Image 1 (cartoon, rainbow, N blue to C red):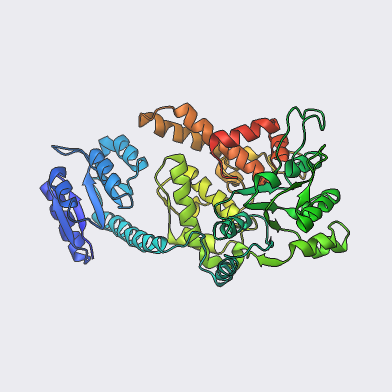
Image 2 (cartoon, rainbow, N blue to C red):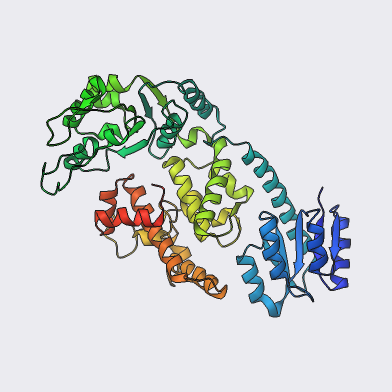
Length: 493
């Protein structure tokens, strides 16, 4: 077992902690200054580092910054006198596991170090598991069946139909099918047929000639032409209008199509992968989907399981999303306590993997400490539903801003938690602004504005199931604006 390292220029502090930790069976190594500790770090590393904040020859804050560069997952506990509490909070916000005020209660200090030790051990196990992860995350038997199917199809050009609930990751499967196919060097072009208005969808798919309709000032290549030699992913195919279904069937049958307003047939060598969350057999029965097109698409069908059918994948998915959100936001990755993880594993996730991703993004912004406890989770996971605001009409939900404003489906708060003061999301934003300003971060306005805009757009897209035009209408902005913002913010939608 690795040692607990203690660095403090006060001999009595080192002595007391050494004795207390040794009695608990925890090996200890002590240092009187940061210079000796940094030298030791070149050849060894601790399980937990406990450091004073003010020492001759180097501060605990400087040490923290250097340690985080070399060992980003190492729990660091900062000790401080009460008069230096502001510095301790700054260190805590900057990545310290916890701060320990002096004079401290010895049993409390030992318990805190033990918690940090347990967290370090969990991190080590999680890192080992992460190193063994495939490109798509999923260890559940249902996902292994999907992986095996992708492997069997790796040398095939056959049409594939992916079914599964919204948010279950159908596009990821489509991309994997493309990546492991003979067409991997060709383009992968995706289009959500439910997100584009009917009068524009035909032009999006097949392109148009100059002057074909008002506003067509130049010839435009459609998605079939763009995907030539590669793969075209048609998401939410069940929502495609019937007249376009007829044109799609023609392309799948003989490979020929016409641009809107065009008179010369074009050919495109494209593999089509389609996806839907709907029951296409039922759509056929109702006359909303062509039966011949269904059979043309349904050559090979892959069913993607809902997240509640693969609960054993939730821990590794949550860790991945927390790390990715932290990277995007430029902050330290949050970690889930056992209690918080248990809550996630027992939640049904009606929004599937996308909802888990949104919750992890929300936690990266809103959770008050590096280790997320169960009480820090959004209230929807705790079984608490927020009543409608008093100003909202009967039957309407409260405004989205009351949900935390930072992630879709992830921030509902109880009325009790709001009280008579400002809304929780405003308070949290003010706290984050204060942290960034005190830390001397540059461009605080731009940082927080980007986070806020990203959260609004992600929330609206979650509500509209990815339909950008509808999301823009709900937000009160134009279609071009939401498209530009998605590109500027680098949102993966």
